[in-house]
Amino acid sequence: MQNAAASNNLKLQITNRQILSIALPIAAAMLVPQLNFIINNIFLGGLGEEELGLAGITGVYYLIFAVVGMGLNNGLQTLISRRAGEDRIDAIGSLFNNGVIISMILAATGILLTFLVAPAVFRVSLSNPDHVQKAVDFLYIRIWGLPFLYVYQMRNALLVGTNNSKYLIIGTLSEALANIIFDYGFIYGKLGLPNMGFNGAAVASIISEVMGLVVIFALMHYKGITKRFHLFATFNIDKRETKNILNISSPLILQHAISIISWQFFYILIEHHGSLALAVSNTMRNFFGAFGAFSWAFAITTNTMISNIIGQGLQHRVLELILKIMKISLIFSCGVAALLNLLPHLFLSVYGQGNDFVSEATPVLRVVTVALILMSVSTVWLNAVVGTGNTRMNLISESFAIIVYCIYSYVVLEKLHLPITIGWMSDWLYWVILFIPSFWYLRSGRWKNKII
Image (cartoon, rainbow, N blue to C red; front, top):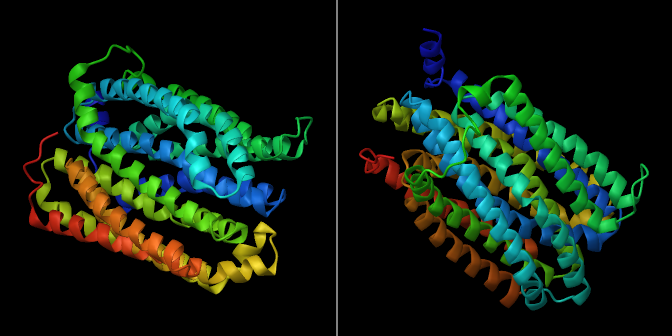
């Protein structure tokens, strides 16, 4: 009887309370590392404008590989949520274990590619040779954090997919605190640690990822989650499960990868406009990450709840659930946008870059706030498609949006040499184009017979 009750707890309800109970812990877990990343950039800003700008270039490069793990995480989460809705708890542990194996193979590939390809990519794309050397040296250290990051992301898929998102914050909080301490120590040579300058941020990030991973798995063991789902019971590759994971995740991996590659392209174009433009754009990425955490949290919630209720046979209530989540996401996003537009100087001055920086960044920030509102709607519909299991639809939508985004960015920034404020409006196009096919597909009902 106890097992049956526990099993039923994995079935989600279509209520605002259920939505918030899943989304808010995810938002907190995403917000903590983003705030940590902002603090990291504040430390690097203390070294100079050049280091602050380079943090954007190297950060986006690492993010390309990070979102590969995110794509695998989202696909795995969809499958775990579906099994939870179907009451097939015995299948969850096998999915997780096979996901970890796949992630380790992807991590090894990412490390190898960085050492083989990164120097050539930056030599061709960056205009300043000194920037090239600093970026490559940094990434040769930073990329070794990839295996720990990927396993961390697999943990996210399990906790969210099994309605245990409340535990996410503990791991991310421990990671963030460690990163702040070691950033301060390694970047400036404090706390008895060596003074590594810009590269110190890379070392600090790896140490914090390891610590966050250790803390969260210790917690999962303590709470009985490891035992309940038979995690790490075996690492034998299940060909059927592996094929299923890759079938769902591969389009998402490609989707996320090309999205961030296009972002790297955007930052390379920005670098051609000078160090100030690059520093401003790096802070905009900070704002997107920190204040967009709420939108992404509701997007992840959409994925897991849609997959879960489809597993329960409640396909007829999918659109009702999407609209509920979208409204809440939009309310949060509008609140964030209002706050940023009312107090731009307050948020921008923390980087300590002076009045020229704040004046240059303020109009860009206003453009970004509109993009945040558009994102809050588009990500919900986009991740609802993920929840149905038709991730190839997402890849098609993403590919078209990226083509338009890159053409616009290239023409505006490289050919017409317009201000970066106009360049950042590319995000408006991107989110609108992503929304249209997702909305059409879900309204069409073509997903209802999809089995995963």
